[in-house]
Image (cartoon, one colour):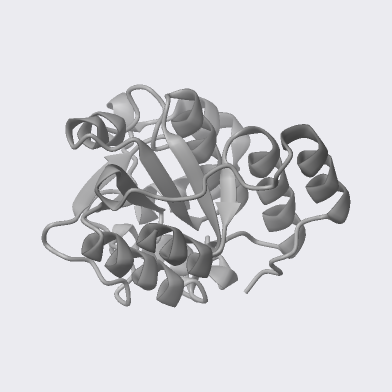
Length: 226
């Protein structure tokens, strides 16, 4: 699992600017949702081409958070990256320019609805009452890419916890857009995974400075009890 400590200079800068480090002192369970990003076989399985090694390590914390949210009357949403070879589910700029032709084909094969790689990781505690949504961009809160924002608002949710993979890509993109769309946003430090410690820590530092709070799983569970 990634180190938990953020750079001391960032922490000190935030204390000077805000007078404190963290944004939120309590979480109202019934108005809080856990958005679990891209915890699919394509990213979690050790033999998957796009595997993120640390993603398997965060599964227990993701499950703990999900159980705590349900017990507090909150919402759990499982978000799956889902692409198609044409139409709205095709992302030309990414598939045509950001990755090689071979990698593009592999991603499309692995993240097409119904493929083995598209499935949620089998060790996740997914319950029938949980939300399951698809997204076709990095962010689950980008307009038109995912129905999650509207579904959460229909439940009077105003706070979002972000967990999943990768910290610095889809999780950070979702956190940024959630905050700018008006949701109080908390990224759970030990329930997110990146390809390296450096990428994970840099992403959390950016989020804590500009887009939301960063808390551990234990912190979140304590805040839900307040």
